[in-house]
Image (cartoon, rainbow, N blue to C red; front, side, top):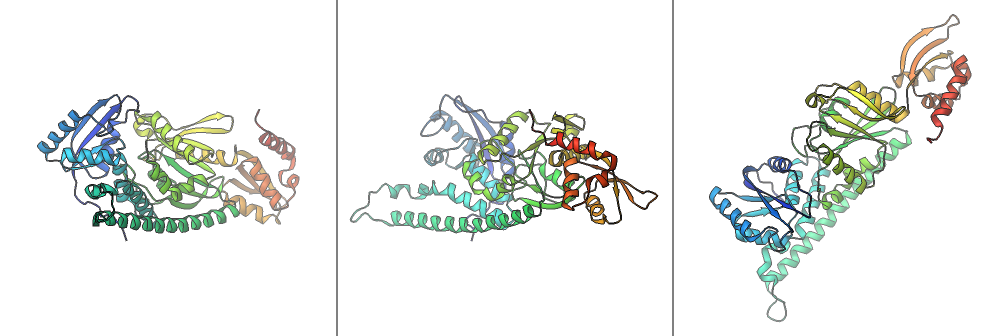
Length: 444
């Protein structure tokens, strides 16, 4: 059972940006893109200045009348504010404007409802909608709720309101139970991956930064990707073999946005848990965006809010538009900090793969290994990691493998198979152990 039917046609909308001195000015272009993503037909974009929000209308009464005249003149169906409005402010504005009024939270909720595709995504959206609606339930019964009750005054309005509230509480409880089952299923899946020592790499970033396009390129997949906000809501996981790393799980997640309503963060915990449990985060950034720093800050704020203290590699996407060259920038030796790519053209893909390798397993080093015929399992594992560069045989029939691999990863594989390190590395064993000590030494 779903409580909300989506409006199919494009509603004629007037957008209202209010610049309040005590609040951060919001991006007008992003607000328009949000409205278009919801399917609104934008008639006009109005702006207003306020020293502080008006408790009754958020904006001044004169500005409210001006918007009401524009609604009547343009025959608008809807007025959308790029700020959070209280239920009372929404009701008061609707009385003046004689049409529906929604705020930024309601707009984002509507987009989420349109984008949700899986059962889990729909559950999460409905829960967020009901939590938003529960504070506004009084709207239809305002004139009756003012009655104090008592003998002769316990009218149908009061009982209906309580019934609605009770039904909402029951439905929200059911949704939370279902989402908890989804969460438990995800925990079991993560536990099995961790038991198999398979790393998880999660793509995070501002909405419309190109995460899903990059995901499709890396995973050779066909996840829905579009030039619109919140094209992806449901987490998508793919297991793939990453050169130099071996098997890993790649996860695509919901895009972040400034002033994302807290109820949405709460409702999407199951989605965001894939981020919390990741081995490495790829923070995908639109390098062509004029608001690039604000978008980076918004993503990092949400990550901090959900407690995602995880190694992060910044991926500056859309270099085909920004004019940047494909490259890796290192924070310090052997530690990648950011990489420049184009998910659209594939430029920088090799650099990204190498940066992920180095972030997960360390700096890759060339080695020549001598494998006796009995060391077949080691050969198999090295080929599964895609680290073998060349293969040959010596006069005694031993296999010679040229590999490109992180020292500690090679050492771990050899020791797990209980094979003699010095036999395999020969004269390079001492040098290898020295490099290994350098790798394991704590940073000053």
